[in-house]
Amino acid sequence: MEKNQAPEKPYWLTVRLSPREVQKLKKLLAQSAHCRNLSELVRTILFKQELTIKKRNASLDELKSEIVKVKGELRSIGVNINQVTHYFNGHPDPAEKRYFARKILPLYKKVGQKTEQLMVMVSQLSRL
Image (cartoon, rainbow, N blue to C red; front, top):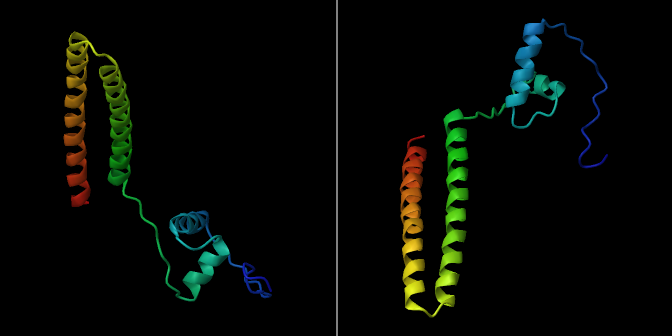
């Protein structure tokens, strides 16, 4: 027998279920961390083996998507800062350097705002 192949189960057990019971089992199967099909789930329940349920926290999912959004915004701001810094270092004229320095200041302020936003999100994570 191969490693990944389940042991042979030659006996069949037929059980009649209501649509509601089938839905309940399918919901449990979707939440189960280890059962791959209904048969496995029913055997696990029937023989009182430990059933691990995966739970999702909707507020955590929402927070994760916000963090990903802020990460993208910070990456864009960083690219802009790098471009302005490149132009700044490439121009020897002091007037042009002042222009680029003034242009980069709002970008650094945005980084500060996004960092504060991330800190709020991290504190929310610590409360979950």
